[in-house]
Image (tube, rainbow, N blue to C red):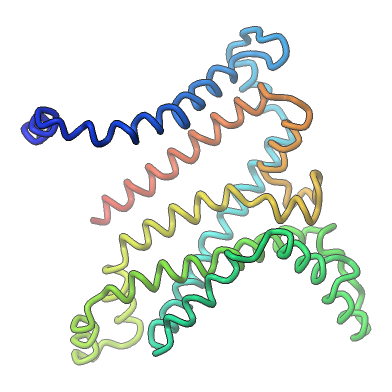
Length: 283
């Protein structure tokens, strides 16, 4: 390995990475270093406060609520999205017109956020379609966005938005598996469960890792739909870190934002490292 590195440096191949390294340094590493620095200073006076911003952060009830809801949201959404998309991808992989369905499943990604919000309002607000049907059936209307049901509306919107893209990733992995391997399993008498557990999943580990990481990161970026439907202060069950950061930005509480950003970056980094560790361990 050391010989390869020395040869790589000696031959000057590192120069091809220079543009990428420069871009990452300017647009990612330097801003990150600035955020870390700001997390130890006050926002207005620029006075050094040590870890006071972090202490105040973990004593902030809004922050603790947002962290709890975000982790809960991720904990529910990841298994639902992974399981549902995998089941759908298996069914689609057996269809002859799979390419057509792949295009259809990407449709949610092309829908503008404003249109998605309009759909959610039509269905889930107090005057929405669902409550109109409940009234017709003689049942009481439910204020979905004003009760704990708001959390499940958010989960539904996340799964709906990301299902198609995740299905495409699963399909890419499934269709890349050799047909001879699948036919051999069928000839050997493998049932559906054995086919999935012993043929499909072992050959889809790289795909599973990619999907898990992307879905994990995307679960921290669910904000626009929830904000446009319920505003800056939605029901507490769907008050996520994105809402909190938006409110801190509005109030110019940049010191809290910086400290919170550092904590989130650490959590995301540790989460990805843990996934990589589990992946390597299984290998």
